[in-house]
Length: 448
Image 1 (cartoon, helix red, strand yellow):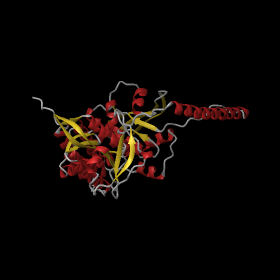
Image 2 (image 1 turned 180 degrees about the horizontal axis):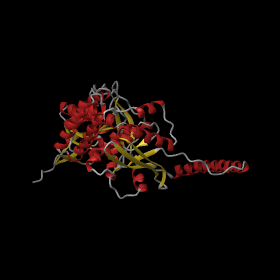
Image 3 (image 1 turned 120 degrees about the horizontal axis):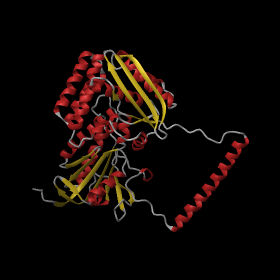
């Protein structure tokens, strides 16, 4: 039997982590720690101020309160916590959270809320900057006589799918940033250009185009006069995605090793400054995909694709890779490495270095040091670690307890063999943390 709907006035709070996708691409583990801290703080502060968490949206969250004053006070306490030093070892960065609030009628049904007021709250939040608390005029009316809240107007805005312009206010208490109008980008209507403005715009662009044509003509003339080729050099697009490597071993159980090699190459590429790299979990959906290279690259917005295969037999390993320019489907570079298994780490580093060379990226001393660093000298410890990673991926795919337990067991075996294998310690802690604080709607991409 369906739960009946109920309509009531509520203060709605939207919060999200600014730039979370970019954080994931740059440093997944750091982004994941921030997300865990985001959720822990939300739950603690919401309970403290008698709010109700309705739903998580990946790196965002919807919360409702009966009292507008409680909602604003809770938002301020959240931001103070997000901007304070975290409890994570090695993480000294604040969590960049935006918060927006609105007051209006909402419909409660089956544990969720609906209504225009929810959409307006999300639009107010979209204007924010990390550390700020923004609120609509309806919230401001309810708390304007409360001296503990210092508020300033940041202007009126025309939001998408909202009929009337809305004035937005920012909490201006000490320590809270007030966004400048020019840095506020959100879910706004496209500006309407009047006839007078259209005329001015066209005149401006006519001048710009005219000047550009004159400059282009002069440049072409000078090039031809000098007898030079008129074709200019194009700058390489330094972006790459790594497709899941194919397991060419006769034993299917070596799939964990194949995936581990692919992930290690990807991690090495991520250490190269100036190279955009797509995360491993974003690539999982392309495992055994029949899509063409150009289509995959188009979806991921990258210029280059790396594919490969791994064959492991006894103490030998063969790794074959090819780098493809997606737009032309042209193979830029390929190579095969037939080595002793003990050379696995040097192979992974060499692949990353060759790709940097092909994409004309000069490695910094820091990147060279990072690529040369080996996680362990004991291959049995490395095997346990890779098996743990495989089980952890499976756990976050369907949440079976057996995968979680197997992941922990393999990580512990890895550090028992080599107590200095830092990635095993880190992923063991990560597994425990995410299992404790994760939610059913926790995005798989955020887990690895």
